[in-house]
Length: 268
Length: 324
Image 1: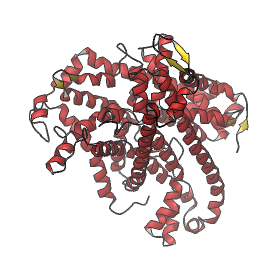
Image 2: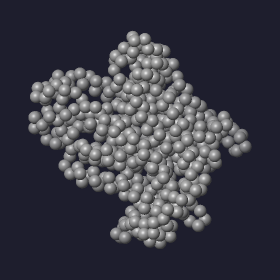
Image 3: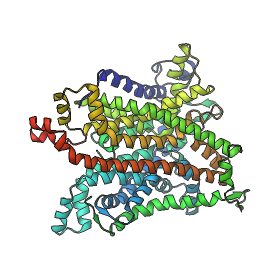
Image 4: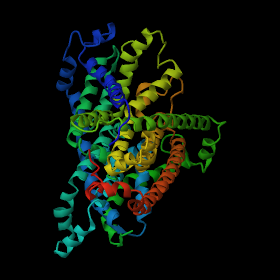
C-alpha cells in the first residue's frame, strides 16, 4: 500500500489528539476533588482510588453497569439471530419487494432516536415492559437489526454459491446446512456484526434513559447524578466515565484484525 | 445478476420484518396519530388536522421559527463536519503504517473513541474544555485566548465541532483504510512502470477504489450528525442561548420537556421525512455505483492491467483479502 510523505508525523499527531482528552479523563479519575478544583496538575500528585472504590461498593452505581451490559447482550443476541436468515435471503434470492424491504430496513437505521423516544415510552408502558432490560434491548433493535443484516449480507455474499449447491446435493436440509456449514464459514462476519451491535447499543443513551426509571437504569443515566448540592463531583464522574470505556476497549481488542473490514460493512 | 427468484425467501426475512415492524411501524403510527391532534392534558385529545404542520413550516410562529432555525444550524453543522472529517479521514487512512504491530495498535486507538458512550464523549470534552479544570480550556486561557464554551457562542460551536471530529473521524479513516487495503499490488506496480506521480496514483487508483466506502462514510456521517443529540446536549445543553440547539435537542425539549405531543409528533414526521429523502438519494447512488463497478470490473482486467500482468506472476493479480 502506498502512503503519503510525512505519514508518521500525521499519524502521531492524530493519535495524540485522540488520546489526550481520554488521558485527561483518566488523570481526573485518580485525583481528589480538592486537587481537581484548586490546582492544575498534569498528573495526580496525591493519587487516590476513592472514586473507584465508591463505584464498586455503592450498589446504585455498579448496578448501572450490570443493567447496561444486560440489555446490550440481549440486544446483540436478538439482532444476530433474526438477521442471519434474512442476510442469507437477501444475498441469495430475489423475491417480491426485496429491494424496497432492504431500503426500508436501512432507513430505520437512519431514523433519529429522538423521534421514537416518546412513542416507545408509550408502547413499552402499555405492554408492561417499561423499566426492564427487554424494553431497551427491543428498542435498540430498530437500528441494530438493519445494521446486522447489512453487514452479514456482505459476508454471506462472499461465500461462493457452489458451496450451498454442493451441500444440498449431499442431502443437507436447509437448517442443517445453515448451522453446520454457513455459520462456521461466516464466523468472522458474525463476530463483526456482534461487535457493531454491541457498540451501537452500548453507546446509545437517549432511548436507554427514556425507557428505564429505577430497576434497569443504565450507567450512562446514573452518571448524570453526580451533580449535587455541594457542586459537581468531578472525580466520581471521571471514574465512572473511565469504567464505561473499558468494555469497549476490550471488545475492540478481540476484533482488531477485522475492524477495518467490518467498518466497511463486509463490503470491501 | 445471478440471484434466483424464490418467494419462499420471505420466510427467512419474516423475523427481521416482524422485529423491526414492531419497533418502527407501531411507534410511527402513534406519531402520525398525535400529529393530527391537540391535547390539554388529562388524556383528552382534539382533532387538529394539519394545523401543526402548517405552524411548523411557517417561520413566523414560535414552533416554526424554532424548528427552521434548528434545522439550519443542523445542516450547517453537518456540512462543516463532513468538510473536515472526510478529507482528514482520507489523509489518516493514507498515513496508516504498512505492516507490523503498529498497524494493530493504530487500529485499536483509532476505534477507541467510537466505543465510548455518547454521553461520556460529552463528559470527556466537558472536563477537557472547561477553563477552570480542563487542560484545553486552561491552556488556551493562559495563552491569552479568551475561551469559554459555556458563555461564548463561537467557542461553543468550535468545541462541538472539534468534539465531533475527535469522535467520528476514525470511522471515515477506518472505512477508507478498508478500501485501500482491497487495492491489489499489481495496480501500484503498473503505476510505477508508467511513471505515475504520487498525486496521479491517488486520483487514478486510490480515490476511485475508495469510492464505495467513501459513499458509506458520507452517508453514515451525514445521518448521524443530522440526528446528533447526546454529545452537544451534555457539553453545551444546546446553549449558550439556543446557539447549539440541533433538531433532535429541540424535539426532545418539546416532546419530553413540555409534553407537547402534537407539535413534537409533527416535527418528528417532517424530520423523518427529510432523513428518508436523503437516505433514498444515497441508496440510489450507491446501488448504481455498485452496478457500474461490476461492469467496469469486467472490462478492467483486459484493458488496464496488462502491463503489470505481463510482468507479474498470475497470483499477484488476485485481490488481497480485505482484512487488516
